Structures are given as C-alpha cells and as structure tokens.
Length: 314
Image (cartoon, rainbow, N blue to C red; front, side, top):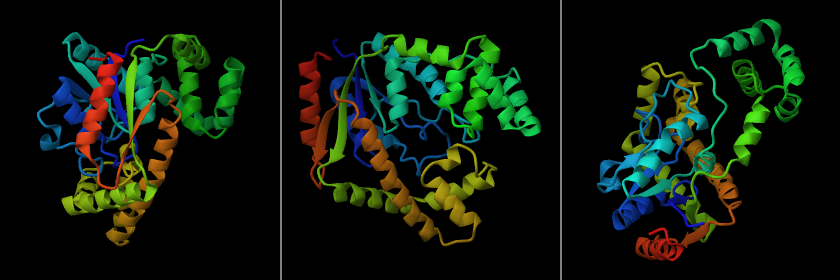
C-alpha cells in the first residue's frame, strides 16, 4: 500500500530530531514526537527535547503533554497522537513521526485500541489494596480462573500487569486476552515509510552519546534534576526512571559525586541504544541510513527525499 506517514527512528543520539525537522521544512510536514520521556513537562535537558531553534519553525506535537508525577502509558500516547496524525493528514500535510521509543511508534502505526476502563472508578485502587491485604497470589488465582492465557503470559511477581488484567475483565466483562487478540487482527491504521538512522561504526555512536551527556551536564542537567526533586516529584515515579534522571537523582540523594552519576548515564545510554537497535532491526521494511563519523545531513536529506518521492508518499 502507498504510505501515508513518514517515520524517522533510530537509537539515542542518532540525529532523528535534526533530520525530522529538516525533512518537515522540505516536504511540508509536521513532527509528531515518539519519545516516552519527552511527553513530560519540566524535563527538557535530560530528554534531549528539541529547542525552538532545533524545531526550525516546524510544528512539533506530543511534547510536554503530561506532568512528571503522572504515570504515562503507551495507551495514552496512542489516544492522544492518533487525532494529531489524522489532523495533519486532513490539512494536506505530511506527518513525520520521529523518536526512539519503538513501542510507541509500532502502536501508533497500528492505531491500537487498548482495553478501556474508567480511570476514576476506583477499581484499580481496590485491586491494589487487595494485593496488600490478601497478597498477590490471591489475585493471581483469580486471574487464572477468568483469563488463564494472560495468567500464563504475565510473570507471577508482576503486580502491575496482574492488576491491569483483572481491572480490564472486571470493568468490561471481557478478558485482556480477548481485547489484545481483536486489536492484533485489526489492520494497521497507517502505512509508514520508515527511515532508520545509525552510525556505520559502533564506537562512533558511543562517542556521540558521551558527547551528548557531557553537553547535557554543561546545560544544567544536575540543576534540572535537583529542581524536580525539590518540587516533590517522587524519585520512584515513571518519569524519574528515565535515563539521566534516575542516575543523577541517585547520586544527589545518596551524596555521591554527580560526575559519577554522569558516567552511569553514559553507560545506561549505550545499553539503551543497543536495545533500540535490536527493536528497530526487526522491521524488515525499514530503510537504513548509516552516518559516517561526522554526519552529513545533506546526504541524509537527499536519501530521504528520494525515498519519499519513489514511494509515492508525496
């Protein structure tokens, strides 16, 4: 099928933000971020959120849509991003989905409808209280009765997913397995043309990551983390588990040198980049562009533009 959206993906520090903005300017597009941490307000430096200058006047969506105290999810991302992509298409412009969170990208392309539930019903809190009073095994037994397939799939110690599976069943009358099966059988909402970025040599990517972390520290990442902690953002909330924030918060709160935390950030970022590459390499339809040690954005723009033209996307 003819593609209707452009996806720019790749590991951290691979140049996605710059290429997406440049392509949007050239092709008349708008950027939809697919980054699970750039959704949070007040978390700018450590998430490498694009600055106004880096946006180059191009509309960017799905940035700053949640507070750090909130537990954001892929379901909420899809629910918010789908109307934005549809709106861009309706305006006759090109949606450019750019980011390194493969789970968000894949579910947005699918337009996956997640099992609904009333967030304010109190059911989740009731189930969580039952875990504390009855123990997780009691809820596991209940899940095994109503949805044995989910019980086999979910680890016995995974409280969050066990509670979620029971929540779906008790609030909808249908199992999460049924919901997931029906969702997988539904055709994708969008047809993507995917461009994946990487460096030809692994050490070049590692060097780029290290420079990025050094740059974040110079820009004030330590102060950003201290400010979030001072504002009462819990150390164990989802947002503060982001690479950069978790390591620096630990160093600050444990009285260790912040430079030590920064070195941990570099290590975790390299490990994350490996996982991202594993995820994106599963996509056999991706068109890979590999940088030399010094990225040539003119070459990447030409490569991408030719692909867009050849695919019929524009």
